[in-house]
View 1 (cartoon, rainbow, N blue to C red):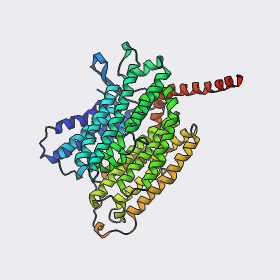
View 2: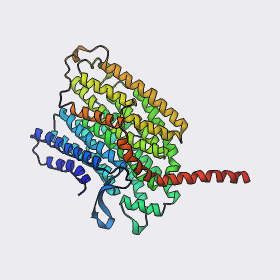
View 3: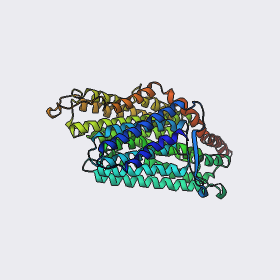
View 4: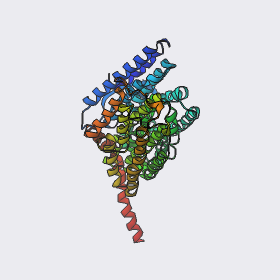
Length: 512
């Protein structure tokens, strides 16, 4: 049995087990969640260490037929593209379980949903069957809606629940239509949900260009809505602001990367001509994420809304890396996905701790918190600096690679993206540090308690991941690059063909 099956199955089995635990055994629910996510995290570290660097194919593969008539199977595997995402997802899940100590009602139900959400997330990233790829994502989304509606906070909690449900359901529906259309392009006798078999078929028999140009936008906008692509992004900051801390960590940090992963895993290699046709538009839309959402973040007076808009802005860099369609840009996009997962989880965990202590996240009501909360304040400074793209953190390495890759294709867009990252991002992050941690301390906050050694564990873990992959990005990039190169081969050929056709068309016009 593949190690991936244990990583996915551990939280799912623990969630099923909790269904039979009496609700009054509160300590048992928390202990089971911590143990299951810890085991999954440790196994993902083993997976990362045992992964053979420099190999483009899938490793730790397991395939079990499920519905033979439809050729649906439980098929999991890992390569350089999803290796870091699985590691990041497992670490964030454990950190989310650690910070859920503030849940004081319906604990059994909360931890059950948290475990199911974790299993769904890890299953979606590991699946090589399109049916389970989509099923696991939807399985992870359902707990998100419930957790915001039941354990969320703020006056707009219900509105946020409805909005995030509508937007994400719409995005998932559009993506599903695209996946079904992709499936129907296969000959009847060759129809399968196996992604490896589908890739081999379209490599031997490329899909018609017209079909690609019609299907690719369905996947681009469907997956894009799930990732908060501008202008379909308004659900994200409001939803994260109303979500309980653990839910915001898992969704913003991990589950939101599903759409980006789908574009890289499915859309780019299977629809290369469609990618060449539509990614110019994606490069323009990503500026809305980087610039518009960055400017909106500057205006926020609530810490969670600031973090939420900043998270949406960071997604613009991943879209830009994907749109570059070259090795350094897409490799940087994958690295940003992993780095942002750790960063988003860390910032929402810190905001959750501040809320538990102060009962507010309104920035105007905070100030001087570095004195009573030296550890939490220092961790927040480091997180904000990582959000600015400070060297030494993984975000810097990923965003630098994206900008180098994008410069080869979109010079103007790259310059504007640099301005958004270096100026806008620095302004709202540094201003938040000043207003929250420095200045006069309100009397009601003078007796705040800093995090004890156990509560420091998730923060230290997430910060360590950001620093390790920031100081040694090669730990990830050496594993990512061969797989990205293999996925980009069809798109590279399509770009070369389009480039070759352009001079020919120009000569024909001159001859006329």
